[in-house]
Image (cartoon, rainbow, N blue to C red; front, side, top):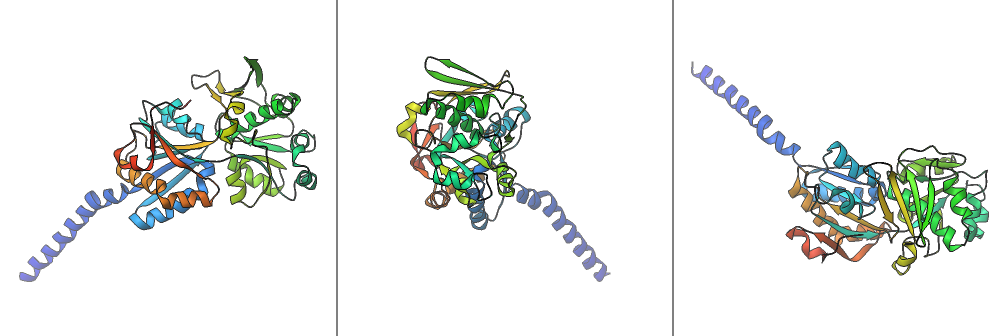
Length: 350
């Protein structure tokens, strides 16, 4: 009889432990998964940072890369859960997410545009010797070049913008015509008050030797396989993947704040014809992040953002060619836990 009671108690203990595990401990572990939706060009530094964060806090970090415009539309149109959002253009946050989906954001890192290629690229030797002739090379019929979709990815609308700037810089509007307007159906340009406005329709066909993919890093495999010869990429991405690249003049590469006024001569209109249509004035490249108001794991997200803004995060980003701003800029109601890392700016990003 006593043995039966002991056995009964043992079974009861096992059942209670199983119950506690399923209904208390297991959900708690699930809640320790952090979902980061981020620009594809941030994959390398964020992967390194996420590994260290997981080791330090014993949590799971899930990285979900996409074009930055696509990410904000995931949140606004599809209700997707993202605990942290890190974008290649910080201005997309006030454009699309504030005030309904975010009340603050931080601008934190920089980059520049280059034109990447490999030893297999057509005219690689010529381009290496004459980088100033790169736009002439791209216009050759036997050369295949690519950039990301301007409606999905900032690198795409920046690539179109760089081409438009080159037309102004070299006093040659055929550059824009040959490389964009003749290749993207429905694309058009207007010169208004000495500003070049380029309109990209929401749906378009690609003609000739241009290749367009959803995000810029999608072009890397095509470049390395020789399916395309040249790709508009961020410098950090080209460096991280060991690619050769043309350094564009500072007036064109969107990486030099001294040329902000010149950059602003070009405005790219994306998603034309839809309620999501926006006009984006070219400016120096600055990355941004926020924690959406719909995040399920805000405390953990704050810990990650603090880690990213810390000296550890700064070192990882700088090492990977995405240099931090000297002092990151905070806009809106930046959480108290993050204010020591930023300079609060009252003005809205334009």
